[in-house]
Length: 391
Picture 1 (cartoon, rainbow, N blue to C red):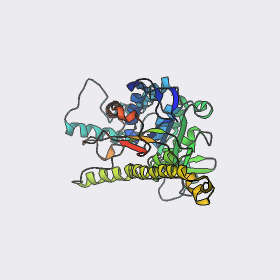
Picture 2: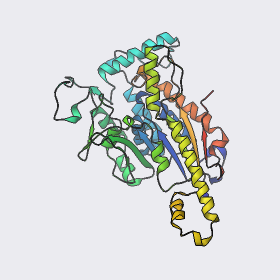
Picture 3: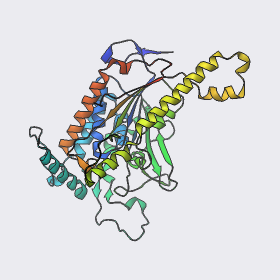
Picture 4: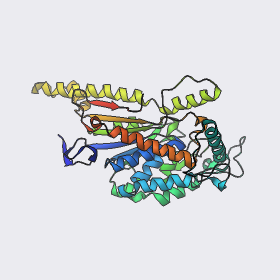
């Protein structure tokens, strides 16, 4: 049955709300994460506020900024965060950002980006992370796992505590919130979900604790690393969750699985990173589409069975998996510029941040301008995917 709540989907008029939930899925990707902020701004302006936001690593940070603020303040808090962490450290090793100055030449832009990335490596990113002095020892153990890293993430904790209302995430629960991390001791992937546990600042920091740059984060006696170590996208977690609902999902990927054959060693490193962190989003989506077709077929078949077969044990097993839910998955995938190179996920400059933000915004505006994105698939098809970024 269709939800009859007033439509929030202003781009295509009023009427019954086509989907029971809107989900925003945010992949990890460091400095590329401002692309996701642009996506959220476009969705917010279109009155497509998510009912559920799930993220990994920088996607977890963006998720916290979204879920931990009112819809009216979400974009503003994202902007405050991204401007803070892309301010040049100590004003050196980077070209100060001036929106009126263009760096159009590709060679010059590559040099600017590499210089700024070097600044990040040496000096950290303001309000995010800072280098440890002295650096951690290499050859002898430490009694403090949270100190074994190149950088200290205390600035990020302070920034999140300032910009995120964790009471809103945990008590108001206006939005479901899920972030992924990996238990260092067991190797198990885990999601911290506000429907199952109280979310604290350390949960968000843990989701982005990518070693050896960042230290493992302690939560209730266990230590956790960045969820991207195992899986860099929360897609599977959301699609497997119960109860299933009619869903409009925006899958925001910062790494593009498809690409050109590398021509040198640097391009090999770039291509390898893209493949590793793209987390096979397309494969997971196709698997879900096929599984949902089976669930729809189960539901249709079970409804046709005579009453005396409804209590059959095999039918009960199928009934547990059957449903008639439908889903649209809108894939928004960042396409990096040729000059970004291997440092693209730690090149925290204001100029590049603004570019990523604009790209996320424009890609989303283009995607939701297609009416079919907001239209329900039929029960036979079950799941539709959209990707308007491919040529």
